[in-house]
Length: 244
Image 1 (cartoon, rainbow, N blue to C red):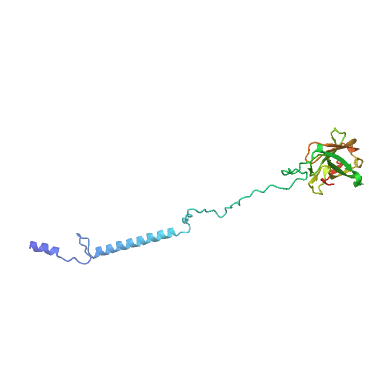
Image 2 (cartoon, rainbow, N blue to C red; image 1 turned 60 degrees about the vertical axis):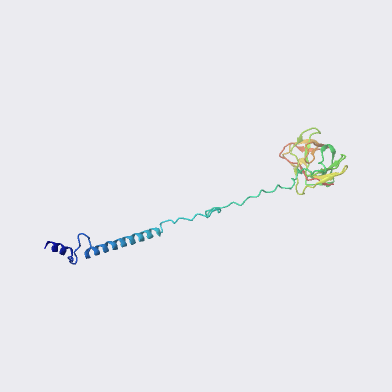
């Protein structure tokens, strides 16, 4: 019968392994779907493992966490320089007495307020004569001698120096010598005989040209002697002033 034949076809049970063409289902379709699902799971797991291996690879550099705000970071070899403190100015006076007297203190002695003399009682040795060079305050106010005088031999009272000036003997420290009116300060002056030097170009000197410490004006002390005109020969040595 036509109706029974169509109904029988629709209700027929498919044999094992046969897939319904309309639905794609059946035992074979179910197995194929299972294999596809398993393949997807394996591929996903492989990709995840590859990503994990790539992230943990020792060749990859890990990102560094930036330092928190308000702090500074320095490389291990960075060196921070310590702040430098300027050195304080020296308070020591020069041997020539270049310090300025404090306000209210007596002024330095000037050539115009001094007289010069020598005292040869110091004796001599090995062709040298030791004497005291004395400077006396002839002014009305006290004054200070501090340091070394400039001394040289001269042809006359207005003449130029002859030969080399005196060199300083700094074995004794300079002192502040306060001279009241009429008082005297002394410095040791050594004169070496010009005849001791075979190369000396010997000339006559009329006396000594004397510059008090830190003074540009000079005194002349008449005392005839012999001098060497060669500048490389030194006949005079002067020490610092001390109280007489």
